[in-house]
Image 1 (cartoon, helix red, strand yellow):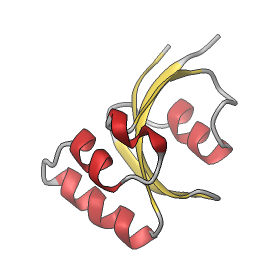
Image 2 (cartoon, helix red, strand yellow; image 1 turned 30 degrees about the horizontal axis):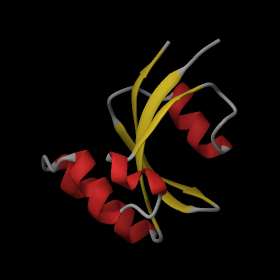
Image 3 (cartoon, helix red, strand yellow; image 1 turned 90 degrees about the vertical axis):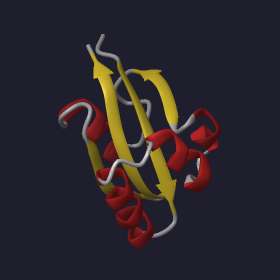
Image 4 (cartoon, helix red, strand yellow; image 1 turned 180 degrees about the vertical axis):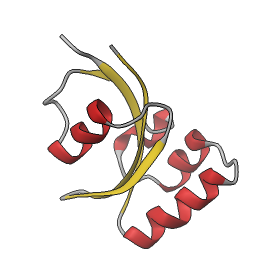
Amino acid sequence: MALASARHILVKTKQEAEDLKRQLAKGAAFDVLAKKHSTCSSAKRGGHLGEFPPGQMVKAVDNVVFKKAILTVHGPVKTKFGFHLIETIYRN
């Protein structure tokens, strides 16, 4: 079975996600921004979601993690929880 490891930053607004994405592009540390801004309980782990198979996350997140380029920050991705910036660390 395929597994992936990813981290994300979850915020309330698309604008906030876009601002954070700009900070990341300028070299800001993903884990630091996640701890400071993410509304997800994963924030205390620097946004790390751990390792998981397809179907465990909401579909919009799964589509990024299992189909888009790894080690690239994707988003903002809208879900019922808010707006995510997602980076896949690896998948096998």
